[in-house]
Amino acid sequence: MIRNAVIDNMLKRRSVRRFRQEQISEEELATILLAGLYAPSAGGRQGVIFVVSQDKDTNEKLGRIKKAHFHGRMSTADVYVSKEQPSIADDASIKNAFYDAPTVITLFAPRKFLYAESDACVAAENMLLAATSLGVGSCYIGSAWDSFDDPFGHATLRRWGVRSNYYAVLHVVLGYLEGPMGGIKARPRKEGRVIRA
Image (cartoon, rainbow, N blue to C red; front, side, top):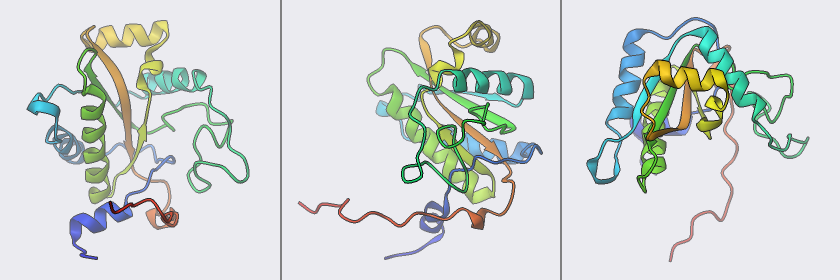
């Protein structure tokens, strides 16, 4: 296998769900956003809108709304998301689906565009990799629309000026990891996932 800085960064990326309350720097945030803005988009449309919230109260309320809408099955001893960095499926005591991250970026995409969700997902991956390269912890939070399914959420969308023909696809939460990144181990890669036709 060929190794270089880009590949090594991809291999060390981990989902982080325990954050210090210290805010990431403006330079780090700008770099992570730039990576998202330069992600591929279908037809070069650049339709994804990025809303950055560093307001603790707003993030906590939206994270609680998201948690209240979580109807997934809880993890078991054998089937779980993460033991080192528990998710809301792993630990029912976690009340905020944004894990108290100091920065939450919500990616919005056009409602009636076929590749809207794909464009947002590619942008999110660029931001996750950029964050890792800078030593910033990050986590992808899917199904973002339910974070706004509440009067506070509706008011927040109006306050942010998000157009009604856009919907929230996902969130990327950012912050400095509480504890060493080396403590989050990659699971071994499953066999048989690559088929050479």
